[in-house]
Amino acid sequence: MFPRALSAMKVSLIMAVTASALFLLQGCSGGGSASSTGTLKLSITDKMSDDFDKVVISIREIRIVPSGRENALDNDPGLPLVVRFAEPKVVDVMSLQFVQEPLGDVVLPSGNYSQVRLILEPNPNGQGQQLSNYLVLKSDLNTRIPLTTPSAGQSGLKVLGPLEIKAGVINAVMIDFDPNTAIVTRGNGEYNLKPTGIRMVCMSEMLTRYGSISGTLFSTFKDWSSATVAVKRRGAIQDVDPIAAGRVFANYTGGAWQAPFAAFVPPSSPTVVYKTFVASNGFNLYSSSAVSVNQGQTTDLGTVHLVETP
Image 1: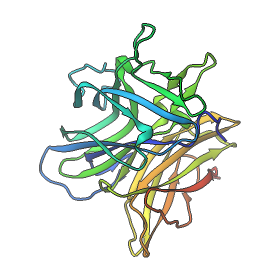
Image 2: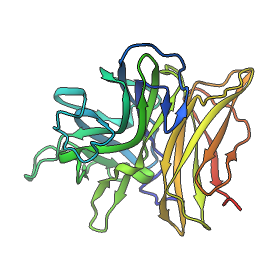
Image 3: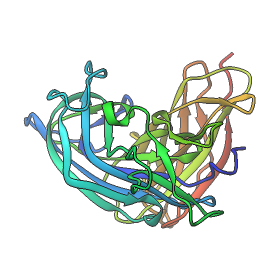
């Protein structure tokens, strides 16, 4: 379904935020307080790839963008700073399969936010200098290929929300970095990072042990721009609010509008399984069969065909 050079590896940035809603879904953690601030905590994890041996990014800082400030530059004082590293934090995401590496935390005002920005150290212009952001293919372990980030030096890699942060409620949010849509091969041999291929997934809590549910949303008869994916527990626990939820964005490729997704949840128990729901304007609500999730593994739902509402 996807080109070989853009296979199944998914990279996820895990964030704990003071929010009770993500992508207009309520009650990720429940509760609340009279406080006007909350704490954001970050860590990073990944899923392996058949094609990439290394995917290295150098993070200079991370910022959150309040709604209405989407056009602000990355040094705008109105963008709350999550973390700024004295030296760029170099992360080979391929070394973090189902492992979390902490990145930092910050106290933030409650309110509505539209983006998370990953501000990367730019690659040097001179020949022979060490690259800041690059990938290595398994087919050629001796060559570092630059990752081109057209806007990252000015306004960062923009990971789109919306994200509502409410005081006194802590949520976990994974940013799913999927090379199937986030890394684009250009005709001149360059590899570009495409921010719309990086997605946030809201979870009910920070996870020390987890697996994932994945699939690909697909439609050939009607275009769609985005969809909300939500996962709920079934069995001994009957969730009203999702335990994991996020929004994905469609790409037109191979004669269809499609997009991969992943949700990260605790491993199933003998009495708890998971169902996945997909909602998109103009399409029927999709509900999967109940599935189990194992620690450190992905449960693949395959292709989810969106059905147009009559």
